[in-house]
Image (cartoon, rainbow, N blue to C red; front, side, top):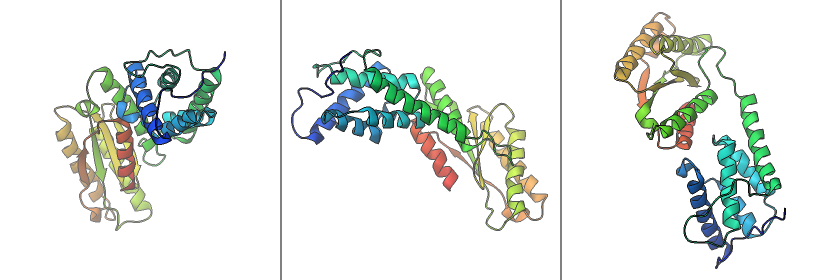
Length: 274
C-alpha cells in the first residue's frame, strides 16, 4: 500500500502557523473519534509529530515518542491508535471545515507498528519497575495508586460524572523531623495499621512519601467521621511509643481530585515530594 503524503494541505504561512492549524485539526478529529479526556490530549510529543509531518519527514521516530508518552499518561492502546488514525485522516483529507471521518484501519502499518511497539514497551516497563506494595508498611505504592486513580477516572466517565463527585483523597502527614532511624519507619507502620482498621472496605491506602500516606475512597456520608476516627487512632497509636509521642497529632487534609487524570497524577507526585 502506498503511503499518503504526510503534508497538511491547503495551509498557508510559516511553519508555526502550519503547526497550530494541523494540531487543531488533529485534536478535533481525535476527540470526534473518541478521545475521552480532551484536556489530556496535548503533550509535547504531539508538536514533534506535527513538525515532522509539515517537513514531510519520516514520522516513525516521533510517533514512537508519542506512543511512549500516551502509555505513560495512562492512555490505552486502542485510544492511542485511534488518535493516530485521526492524524492520518487529517493528513490525507482536503476537508478543512467540519468533522473528518476516521478509519482505524487506514494508517500505514509501519506507522502503526512504531506507535504500538513504543506504547507496549513503555507500558511493560512501568509494570516491571512498579511494585504493588511497600515491603515495610504493606501500604500500596504511589505507582499502584496512580493506576487506581486512572480506573476511578474511567469509571466516573462511564457514569457521566467526575471523579471529584465519586471519590475523595485523604492525605495523612506526620512531622517526623525530631525522629530518626527505626522509630521513624515504625511511625508509618503504625499509620498504615490505623488506616487499615478504619478504612476496611476496599479503599486504596498508599504510601506517597517517607512521612505521607493517602487513602483513595468512595465518597460517602460517613467519610468525614471515618477521617476523624483515623486521626484519633493514629495519635493514640503513636502515644504508645515514647520515641514517637513527640511527633504530636497527624495532619489530615482532604484533597479535591482535579478535573483530569493527568492533573491527578501530578497531584500525587507533588504530595509525595512535600
